[in-house]
Length: 143
Image (cartoon, rainbow, N blue to C red; front, side, top):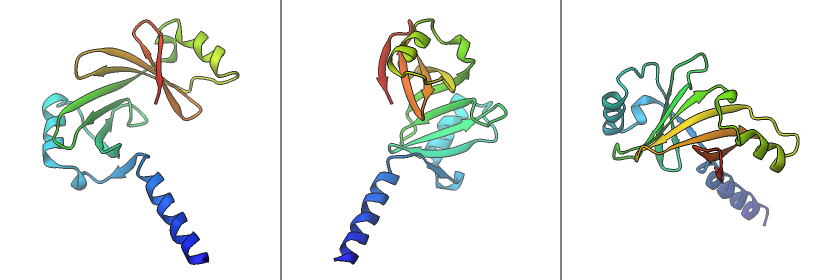
C-alpha cells in the first residue's frame, strides 16, 4: 500500500512538473527553433532556453537576462514575444483592476506582448501569476 502511494505521488509530481517551465540546454532545443530565433531576432545573444507547455521559450537581454522572452512551436513557428516594460507603462486600467480583484497585491513585473498576428497585449505579474490585458487595459485572462 505504501509503495502504491509513493508511486502515485511520484507520478503526480512528474505530471505537475511538466506543466511548469523547464530550463533547457541549447543542445536540447531543435535546430529549426534556434534558426527561427536567429532569423527573427538576430540581436538575441546569451540566450537561455525553457520548455513550457510543449513550446520553446528563448530569454535574453537586460540585467536579468529576461528582458525579452519569445516563444516558438517545436517546428519553429513564432508564437509571441514579451518585452519587459516599466510597470508605469501599463495601460491606465490595469492598476485599478489589480487593486479591485487582488486585494493588497502588487504588480511585480510588466511586459508588452506581441503575438504572431501582430496583436498587442500587456502582462502584469502578481503572486506568481500573469494577468493578461488588451491594449486598452481590459482584463482578458489569467495565465
